[in-house]
Image 1 (spheres, rainbow, N blue to C red):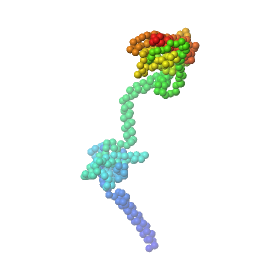
Image 2 (image 1 turned 90 degrees about the horizontal axis):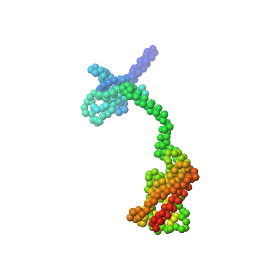
Image 3 (image 1 turned 120 degrees about the vertical axis):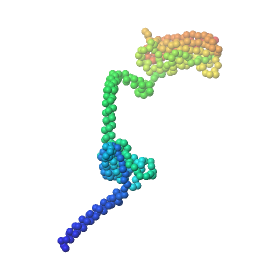
Image 4 (image 1 turned 45 degrees about the vertical axis):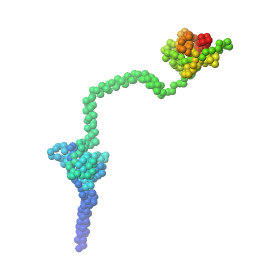
Length: 370
């Protein structure tokens, strides 16, 4: 009895272990999720690299079963037949899409099912055919893409070589003209308001005529002085230097207080006011009646460079009655020498020339209208 006791214990332990294994298998097939199953046939029209029996089956990304069978179709060398086993409540329909997905860093293949639009089953589900290229892995897709790129490059080798050669010529041209390009870019920056801020302009004004003496004849008529006319060259606030084309950096920051025609109009009116404040001409304003119009056409307002620089002012004047008839016309011009080619001496010379020409204009106007 003592000798048999250990053998009985060992035998009982072995039977218990075998029972536990069978119990685990039973649990795995029922409680563990591999009990009741529904099988479906799949068809892949192409290779399924790495797909194995036991691989997971996902429906909309959720694991619902596994692959239970894989085989080659005898009548189609490219076709692979598979059988999957999934949970009974998996909504597999006739329009369910089939594909392969590759998960993880190693790219383990799984069968991926995607639900269609059918909500209710309409009879037995036929063999589900995978989409073309469903078994193509990322590696194979990359290889195919590289093959296509290589084919395109091979077909266009000559045009690509020509393009590269043209780019080389273009870059060499840019290198030779770097200085000019910098100038163009700087000019564009100035036009668009970018780049380094421009130095502020120094504004200069013209002096009106003042000293008329005590023995002056009064202005009896009412004059209107419209905006003077001129060619486009004089519609500027810059100082004009003739002949053009020279470099005069000393005048780069020079600017008159207004465009030349407007400046002349304002200073002529001020000169008339200094002569007779009560009867000075008015600007052309709608509704203001006047007996005469004084029309000014600018002929010159520039520095002329010769043996010595000279400031020149010239304009024509016409007096019209209220019916538009010309009563008188005259050309006025005056010159003054510059002490030096500087903005300050230029302003003094222009002011002196304008003072003299303004006095002649006022005396002539008073005489014609008197």
